[in-house]
Length: 290
Image (cartoon, one colour):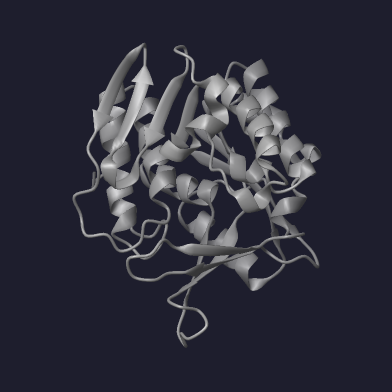
């Protein structure tokens, strides 16, 4: 049985300083579900990934990493003649990372409802989806909905991370409608502090709501109780990937049957590991290391 089934877009990522002046850059592969899948696999969980990549070097690299980390890539499709999406991260000291998206008509955006394996999702312990995949295209959005309905019909736990990226939506209203719908379907709801208003109707007592506040820590409301954990006490190299690592740690602990406070603690450990690395996922720990 698969522990966590997820669907998303594997991406290439180029990171540099001030791009207009820098002569050096770093190439990696990433994606919120990508990071989460790798993190869970390193902790010994069986994770399966659905998505599409192009028949290019970035797509090959993404598949190589996922296979090497033990993620089930049976459902990933290579699309001929289409490019894998790319992010460009402009990083400057003491300033927020600026991200440029090059993913219009990318292979990942071609994910469609017909690609969703209903039976495999129904056999998993948990489905994890994000607002980023829902924002890629109309077909990708429907694919997420089909996956969520499949999980709901099979009584599979649903985890949803809001992951609001304004560039992927035509308007805030559209984002609120879609993200709110997915949030209301979730058992575990992950979001950042500034995303609370986007899904306000879903913030009800019966739902486990986990709020990541970055360096300030995180909190969860579960069983009508609130639990908190402190933020990072480590040297910060790059905060990209920290949110996804936190979610993976929390989900891992939930699968292990730990308490909400213990779930927060494991999430914070993985988040701290992520921010001490230049990569979203390369610095993540194995189970023996936590």
